Image (cartoon, rainbow, N blue to C red; front, side, top):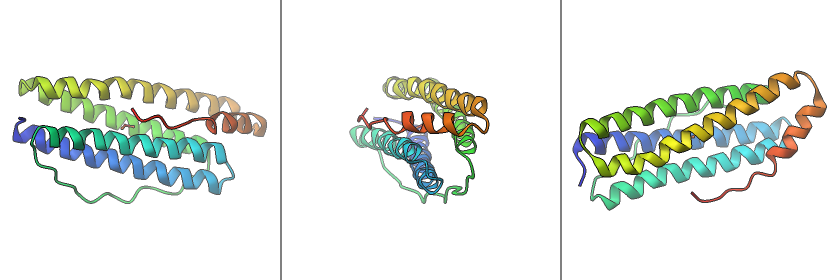
Length: 166
Ligand code: FEO
């Protein structure tokens, strides 16, 4: 069993993960609108991953016999004029998610909730990977500047990403 504070915080994290999914689905559509099909694929896979993150938390709450309370999901920002702007927004958002995972872990530690700490460990590791990927793309896109060739090469690379259930 888990305490009420943890239950509430995990429900809030489900909402943040679903918002993340929604944000990246919007970016996927924006990428296609810019003619960047590879980036459209990359953000679509990210949407699938974020949905998976929300489901991990959902399943954990059920396993623990805790309550699930789904809240409304905010409308994501949907207008980006460049891929660099999308990845900069992605990095900023993921830093916010990292902070919320850290806050959750802090709460689990103070509540002496060891099971939740172990479950959250996966998210801690995942956030390191997500921030590293986004930072790399921001750096590459900044270096590319207005080079259409580099942008198309990166788009091709982004098009190869395949969803793997984690
Ligand atoms: Fe589920 Fe991108 O954090």
